[in-house]
Amino acid sequence: MMMNTAASNNMMSSASAPGNNAQSPGLKTYFKTPEGKYKLQYEKTYPAGLLQYAHGKTTTQVTLAHLKDKPVQTSSSSLGVSGGVRSAAARFLGGGNGNRSLSLVGGNGGSKLVSSTGTRIGSSGASSSNGVAGNSNFDGKGTYLVFNISDAIFISDLNSQDKEPMKSIHFGNSNPLCHAFNPDAKDGHDLLIGLNSGDIYSVSLSQQLQDVGKKLIGAQHYNKDGSVNNSRCTCIAWVPNGDGTFVVAHADGNMYVYEKNKDGSADPSFPVIKDQTQFSVAHARYSKNPVSRWHICQGSINSIAFSTDGVYIATVGRDGYLRVFDYKNEQLVCGGKSYYGALLCCAWSMDGKYILTGGEDDLVQVWSMEDRKVVAWGEGHNSWVSGVAFDSYWSAPNSDGIVENVVYRFGSVGQDTQLLLWDLEMDELVVPVRRPSGGSPTFSTGSLSTHWDSGSPVGTLQPAPGMRDVPKLSPVVVHRVHTEPLSGLVFTQESILTVGREGHIKVWMRPGFAENHSSNPDSLSSTSSKEKPPLTGKIVSSSYRQ
Image 1 (cartoon, rainbow, N blue to C red):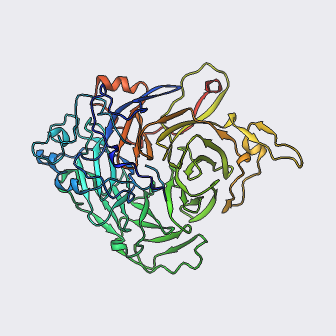
Image 2: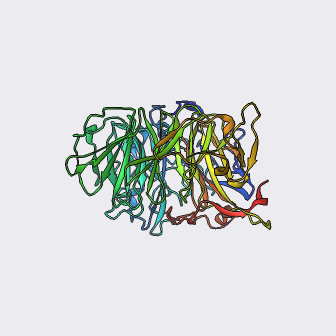
């Protein structure tokens, strides 16, 4: 999957007030964009007492979880992350779907000092600010960060200035690698967790937060002991509008569909895969989980992503191919090859028109569902691209121009420790025209479909395009945000979250929100991820680009 370039053991630094810049040289607490300045507001990581070992075994991924009603906890729960936390480890391993920081400044509140010896969660006399009790931010609902490090899942309150998590869940003999949250789950089981043993759990996040222990409670267990598939879980996702259906991808190229309301006991009676190179779907013989097996590719599936409406699912894998499937009809629609190497991450635009991929060729690729091919390459990373996402909350600055174009803002992070932001304006792209025989290539602007061949037949996987055949994008922002390789990023209404693969998360407040938040530090966004505008592309004047 991803390169194991582990950060050195001495990279950790304790947080301090922003005035005492504890960041590594060259790391700034802000970055500028055409629309204004993004400022580092909070940093989240594992408890100070956590030992750093087992590098290379896991990659930190982050799931943003919005609870409509915050759990009510007793004061004893503020120490619920004790003892076992120290035995967990620090780590990260790509997992394709991207996911993210290091050497952090002590939360933009600035008043709290975290030393390497003080305020450890679970230590005697720990401040109640490390837990739920006594925290004025807990007003009945909230937004949480769920992230994995080594054999543990940690949960932090996005509203809180606390750097350390409020809760840990330990798995002992196996490491959690991926997770997903469903804010609309009907029976309370809203959090999925996939392990490197192949085991899968569904639990209630609220129930975990109310418990003072360090083990899962009330969990539904699937693929127990790898009875159906013992290769590691690489990514997991709820099916949009799927009424409790979810999919799990594995390192052996198989993806399984589960229905939460069916028997969790495994039915391993799927037929042997006759041709490992061909896509195939098999259904369970009995009404048990998993209900179906999709054989996608040879080698690991590194990332999966559903379109917002749940009609399509995209996968990227070790073989370097993006594949897009009609989920309901179980049909391969289109896809294509990377320029070089494996693909590690993918993401959809909110309107379902474009797919981002990133991987070992250091490129961010923009795929068009209409054209069924790569329509732009983003050049700017110096190493593997490990996380990509569209910013569905972004709005371009006002402009008085006359001509209007649709602009998509998206971001990418990589093992080069950098965050890049990009603006995609289809009408601004310079499109190579097919080279006439014996002549030089010519270029033109305008609609891609005007100059390129029409869409290929359904189910066709495109070969890797030539470097001169694809329009190039340049980033509008390049900012080194961490000292460790990054594993992903998340956009919220008020911020951008960048995630280091060893469990360090930074929260960058958007222009305007940082000022508002400094006067009201208890109001960090609790916006549900579902409260999004209908389109990722924003209508702006073409004179905006600088």
